[in-house]
Amino acid sequence: MTEHTPVSSEALCESLRGFDTPTVANAIEAFGVRDRTAGYASQQIACAYPHLGSMVGYAVTCISDCTTGGPQRPSRYGDLLDALIAAPKPTVVVCQYVGSDRARGCFIGDMSAALFRRVGAVGVLTDAPNRDLAMIQKRVPGFHLFGYGAVASHGNGAILDVGLSVTIGGMLVRPGDLIHGDADGVITIPLAIADRVAEQAATVHRAEQETYDMVMDPNVPIDVIKARFSH
Image 1 (tube, rainbow, N blue to C red):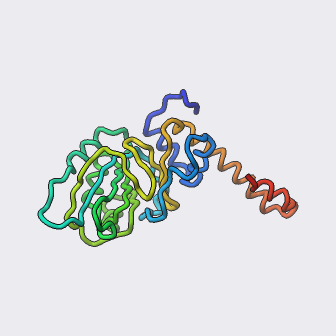
Image 2: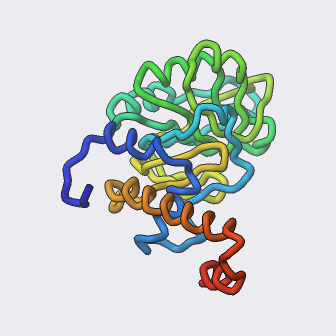
Image 3: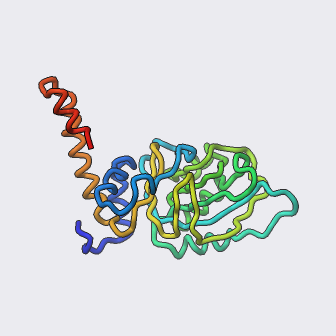
């Protein structure tokens, strides 16, 4: 595949789903399009369902708060659904928590997961906790969930804004960014090179297998191995 080859968003995402996230991260480095310290989230953003493999989709962003007390506030939940419907598929709902007590925040439960799936989302990425983790697996099988642990209550929740740049675990996410995540964490894939990343990831796989074979070969001198691992 070259950068001039037309490809649908669904086909592109499916090709990238065949690789684990660290391999995709290594593949992105080959293009030199961003600093190596950018484009990935911290270990605070945990994968709830590692057995599902890789999540790939286009970011639809929002911010939320559910730990501010008082009367229930207006929520832009409907605007979020409209954005999901309008976005290229598949989508990932990306939510930054902006309340004062993130550890007691909550973004989604099983009902929201089901509704997000209905309008084309394959998963959620948030820096807030979530709830109903077992019921999401039961009612929305295959739905990916990345967040900051779990809580029992939804609190006084509201979607405050939709369609803006957010920061999740130190990673900047813009509306429309391509998200890739698995048990090892979450990254963004620069759109300018997205249609070449799967091919490069396959190259990374081959190179890593060659390196592994060399490391395990007792006939290869350590000095040769050291040279391979030196930058």
